[in-house]
Image (cartoon, rainbow, N blue to C red; front, side):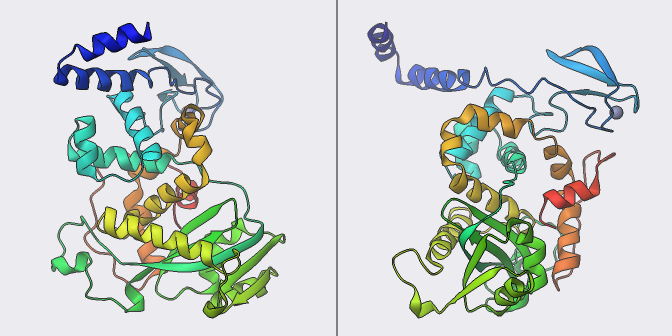
Length: 354
Ligand SMILES: [Zn+2]
């Protein structure tokens, strides 16, 4: 059987072979079915709902409390997507193949750059949060990326979008807090400018426990934070870094790779989306085994019902970040094209980088 197929395959023209491979790749994703166990209405959380016919092959429900209809894919990343199979293959490629430019991805999947952009962000917003705490010996450091308004239209000077003009100026440095033990890494965009102990507490405080021993370079805010939160803390001078895994080498090594991804592969990303790219990186570090066993992981992503809320409110989330945690001015708002009724602000802000 296998040899027969192989012989037939080899008798095809180059063009047909390529087509066939594409087709076969997509069939792998046909049986990734969505979570069909609806427990409550995604609009108002009521349990009072009834079946309400089918829409494009998917069961539809009607809510008795808010009178709206929904399907199991409502609110998820794949909810409003027409080419569902292709989207799943796209998601799989992002997780298992790594970081590719929008251009490469649009050619690979035969979609426009705009669709490629939309899909990438929808996938990134479906990534599940890691709930577990970072215990044992954990390294902490802050990394920075240049403030960037890449893609924002209407700015008076194009240099405002980013560039090297402000290098070295702290108030243009977007800080990312990185914490890692041997099993897990956490990356959080905390603020723009100098990191205070309050920034650390707000961004990664919920990942710490009394069983954590923090290790860091001489960083006053980290020491102050650890002292205040009564977490054991070990200070390392850069010269004391050793090869046996002590010191902040794991974080440093990760920082280098994250910087390469953001600054080289993607030629800088907008500050608005930086947390999403950090999540992408983090997921590929933390979930190598899950990604290989992609069905389960993909299902978890596809049942994330916060994805659409966050996706459609990303501009408000960014606005709030700039106004609360930086000295920058929020300029040239991007007009929201989406219906955003009924979204739970606090849930969304908690989920995003606020
Ligand atoms: Zn409802």
